[in-house]
Length: 403
Image 1 (cartoon, rainbow, N blue to C red):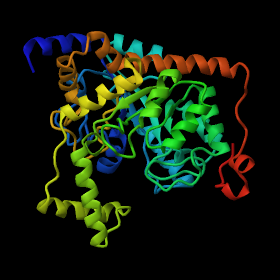
Image 2 (image 1 turned 45 degrees about the vertical axis):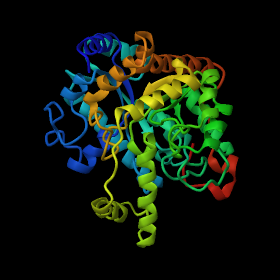
Image 3 (image 1 turned 90 degrees about the vertical axis):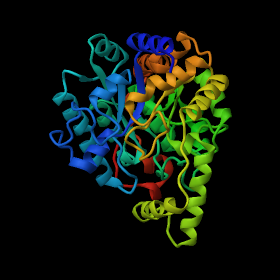
């Protein structure tokens, strides 16, 4: 990138650092070292993960939503327990690296962390299975610092349809709408990444606060079910929400998406079920020897940023890289140090400093603040929700969770 552009981007990031919507380092820490931060010392550059503290600083990251993801193969009590372990890992990480990281739960705390030279660490739960259909569990996650919940992950939950599962409800069940209302009352952001388009629309019909897509891109640019259709992007203007553009190659590059579909078809012919992640990953490793995976680029991500800006408006776009949640990332965005390259590419396309600062953190901070304000207003007129899923959706839906 040109020296003058680089200087401009570094100056902008000093004033308006990135608030990224989604990073899966906690799960990587679980898988690699069982949460042993002595063995995965993120203060040291060059860790095998996409994320460490020196690269976060190099990338201009001032705030990060750490995902407390657990796979939807875990259900019921096991999902809740694993989610609590993930939350504990984030608390332990911020305590260990307190000179660099600090837990944050409000807009003011994020701004104070940045002003003090530390990276604000927010927590987002990825998948409604983490609460086992219990509003009480939802409230306890909030009490532990969780500030968004993605309504589903890759599979449906009893009260909401996922983008990558067969639709059952056509959106949200009555209990699912109650989950959204309770999240509004708490000030927990409703995250619509991973959910079906009908669930997106039902949530927008229900919510009284801005929503987020913590790591999703534009479906009109790349036709992947994890991306957001234009009619939903258009509704963000009225809702006040933010689509945080992700960097996942199969979500941003039509060429990579097509390659993935071809690999899936080849797996089916070979008798390998894509739902069996271990077997499928082994198959894809072999498949790539004969049919190399194409690369996504910074320009692919630029195309999504420009489309979201055009359709939703500059006030409704952010960044959610999904670092440490995927194996491969676009050329130039291989780890968390890459944000300046994306911003420079956007600057070269005519994005103003005001546009770029809205993208990096301005819009996400606004949404945090507005969700807090709405929560105060709602809590003044409504107490905690006490409904159980069987009360609203019928006894056959009960999974054991209590409110």
